[in-house]
Length: 319
Length: 257
Image (cartoon, rainbow over all chains, first blue to last red; front, top):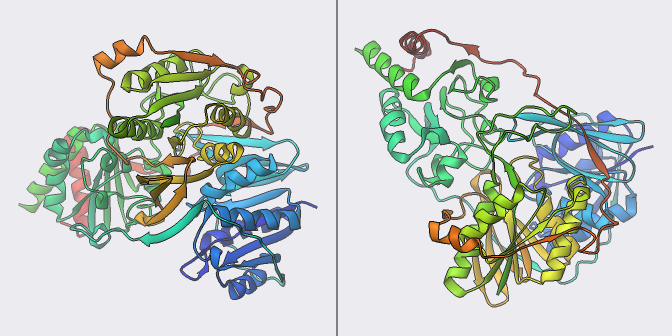
C-alpha cells in the first residue's frame, strides 16, 4: 500500500487550511497516511490533525521549531521520513514548503515536483499535474519508481472536512546547531493605499509600459469610478508603483465590487489575489490569456484604446 | 570574495508558445530567449557586491548552444567569467539530476556566496536553489527581498505570503534564492559587451564534473498541453466605442457610477 507522509504547517496557532488540502489529496488517493506536525508546543494541533484525516500523526515539539527554521524543520521531516518510509512526501507550496522540500528530496535522492494542482497514482507510480510558463501551459509529470517529494498549490483542491480516528506519536528529533537563525516576522508597513478597502480597483500590468502611462491611461479611469489603482507584480518590481499597489498571492488579497484588469495576463500569482472580486472585467490583447478564465466580462483588445474609450463613455454617462 | 550566480535561459516572456511535435515540451525553434527574470535580479545582487566591496562574479548555466547568448549578456553586464554545462544528458535529466551537476560546480569553485532566482519562468519549480545547497553541503534560503552582509553572516529578508516578511540570519557560505524586485537590474553597456568578448566561457560536461553517472532522471514529462479552460469570460465585441459603451452600461448596472 502506498505510504504518504503529509508535512503540515501551523500558522497563527492553528493547522493551515493548505495542510487539510494535502489531507484531501492523500485521502482521495487511498493508502497509508501519516502526518508530521511540528511546533514549539503542537500537542493539541497534532491531536486535531489525527482526528481530521491525518492518520498516524508524528509530533515534534521543540522550542527550535516554534518559528520556521530550515535546518530545524529539515531535521524533523527527516526523522518522520525515517519513521514512515514514505513513497510520497507532500508539502504545501508555501514559503516554508518550497524552502525545505527540495532539500528533503535531495537528501532522499528522490524526484521532486512542485506547485502541483493534482496528483494521481497509476500502477505504483505517481502522476502530477501542474502549470508551467506562468500558467500558459499544463504539464503532466510521471514518476518511475522510488519515492517522490511534491509540493501542492494552496487552494488547488477543497480542504478535507471529514473526520477519522488516527493516533499521535511523539517524534524525537535531534536539532543541532542551525546555520540559519530566525530573527523576527515583519508585517508590511501600512502606507497610503489600502486596496482591500476599495470598492473599485483598476489594475494594470507590465504592458501598460511606464509610470507615465499609468497616470495617463489607468488613473483617469480610477478617478471617474472613485477607485484605487492596483498592479501586477512586474509593475511594482520595476518601481513604477509602490509595493502596496501589488495585487496577488505575494501582495494584497482583494475582493472589490469591481476589478478591472488592464494588460494583465493572469498568472496564478496574480489571480490568487483578485479572483474573489464580485465582478471582473479583463482587457487583454491575447485571447488565450488566463485572466479571461476568472473574468466575468472580457475584451480582447488594446488597453490603450479600450481604457480611454471607457473613461470617456463613463464621463458621458455621468453627464 | 567569490560569488557564483546560477542562471537559466528561458523563452522570452512575450514569445508565442506552441507545443513541440513530441508533445512533451514547447517548440523552441523560432522563438526568442532571454535570461530568466528572477536570475537577472540574482546577477544584479552579485554585481552590486562586486561594485561596493569587490568580488569575482562567476555565472553558471546548463543547456545547448543557445545559452551562450545568456552567458554573454551576463558577462556584458559585468560578470567576470562563465561556466557552460553543455551535455545532452543533463538537458534530458530532471530537477534532481540538474541540481547534482550544478552543485558539482559549487564544490569545485568553493564560492563565498551563491545567488540564483527563486524560480524559473518556464518550469517554475522553485526547487533547484535549495537542492544545490543540500548537495553542496551549505545553508540556503529562498524568496529573499533584502540582503545585508556582516562578517561571516548574512541577514536576509524572506518574503512570506500576503506581503509579510521574515528576517533570518544565515551563515556563509550559503545559497540565497532571490525574489523579483530586490533591486533594479542594470543593462549591459556597449563597453561591457565589448569587454565581454574577451572573457572566458568554460564548457564542461557532467562527466568533467565527476557526476556523469548520477543524473538519470527519476521523473519525466509525459505531456504538455494547453490548459483546458473552465468557464471563461463573456466577450464584449464591436468597435472600441461600442465596447466602451457596453462596459459603461454594465458598470452603471452594478451601481458603481
